[in-house]
Image (cartoon, rainbow, N blue to C red; front, side, top):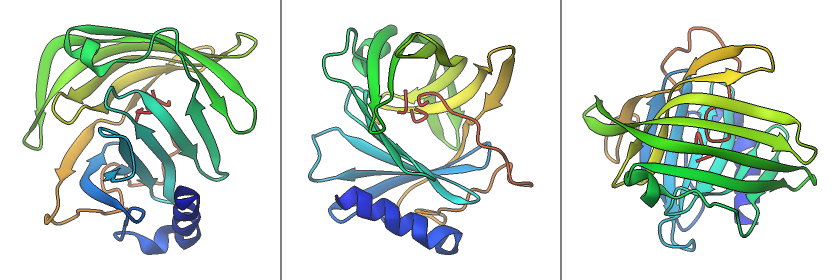
Length: 235
């Protein structure tokens, strides 16, 4: 209930609250990330959650549009797509759970199912693998990954398919978007939501809700791996 009220409050406030992100009671923001593609994300943790759980709230020029929670293995636990608000959760007992630990050893294959509160079901399969390359962005060193995943509905119809690169931080146990391609059913479309700036407590721009990179015009939202994950799958 606390997160439902939190979402309603943020959505109702809209862009006028830009620059004033506050997590729910009992939670604390630890990092703000400004990314390409006109997106800013606030990462926070909550004392009531399982140890290692992390939340991410994503904003574009119109306000918050996505909220997600991952566990210590960067396994997607739940997410909220906004406007309208729809909650999606990880089904129990996945065939092959996503594992950040396995990825740090070189490669992680995953096979799991998701359920929306609307009754929609989907099945996700794919892999993440370290490429052996690293990149330093705004003073933060990240490891590069290569990924490929497919999501199908209950009837086996393809919903999403993507491939490309992402970045991970081993100590933070977080994924960050990178240059990738999304299949629209006919063609592969490029998208790049790579991080540009990491902002920590006490620094200018911390807890901002205003994206600042590639925002010359209102951009259509392109899905970022995982969800589709981002945020992260929906990570």
